[in-house]
Image (cartoon, rainbow, N blue to C red; front, side, top):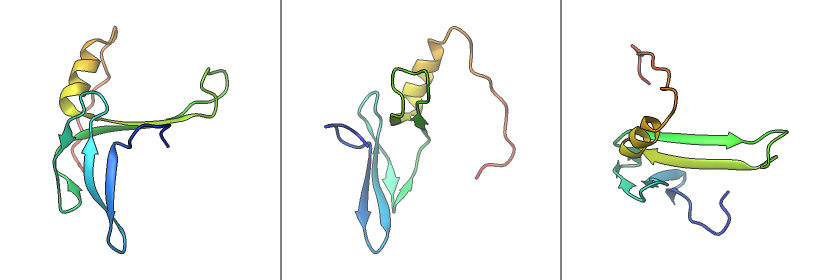
Length: 89
């Protein structure tokens, strides 16, 4: 998925893939993973660029820790749309 860089998610194969680490693409901090479960919130983006883009057909994936996400959205010209969810998965 990445060209020459390291992935932001590391897995350990034990009959099945077990998550070992998630690294923020912005600040490089390793987020807390325990027993294959991410123990803090993370914004994960997976986007395929379509026609009329300079990145036609390219897939980008990145993970952001909550702190970096907050800093990025604070710089937006228009605020993000927020809606409270009552059921979390």
